[in-house]
Image 1 (tube, rainbow, N blue to C red):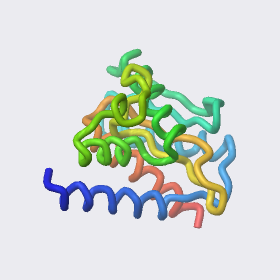
Image 2 (cartoon, helix red, strand yellow; image 1 turned 30 degrees about the vertical axis):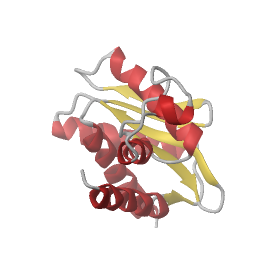
Image 3 (tube, rainbow, N blue to C red; image 1 turned 90 degrees about the vertical axis):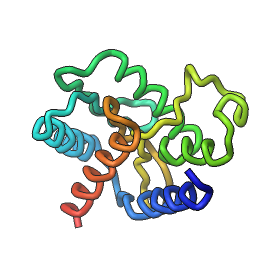
Length: 160
């Protein structure tokens, strides 16, 4: 990718993070959002794992047929990235790629514990900031990210 292409992707993600914010987020919101992701996965025959957490509490987790424990491990590592940086895992990974560096050399954290790959998106409370994560694992990273964004956009549109 060129520098301009990286910036285009990063601007798109910044816009998604500004757009996809909640006024409040409850356990029932996590359940409804999680079930909407399950329905998308089933309709499309996706072999993914889905996770929604608020702080350190896992509110929703589902592993579709064909997913594996490896997807759960990816979710944990992607969530750590969002928790640490307050940005989507794809934004962090894209920034690192743009800069030609890795998470270990730039931030001195283990790539075995932090995976800056797309699929984890912050649950952002308007006026407060990130409070949790919505994460998908099992597709190429851009597709994981796009599925989460699609589900968040549809869920938030239904709440307005």
